[in-house]
Image 1: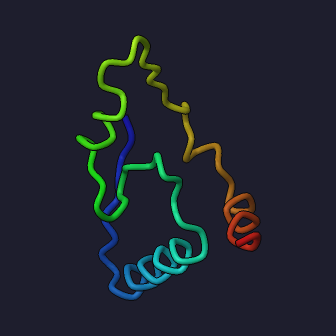
Image 2: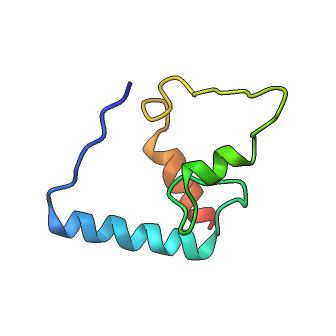
Length: 79
């Protein structure tokens, strides 16, 4: 369970959108990534695994809480 916040500040929302567009242009997503990718869907992602003998589902506990601002900044600087 995690809480997803809705940005209500128009300037912050615009800044986040510009950052997302810039990062997406600099580093296209992995071909097997289906979440939030233009033209992709959860159904398309699931079809790739239909009929598989094994399906591994996992989640990283406390991912957002364990990711520091410095780590995010360093990753963005590497782009």
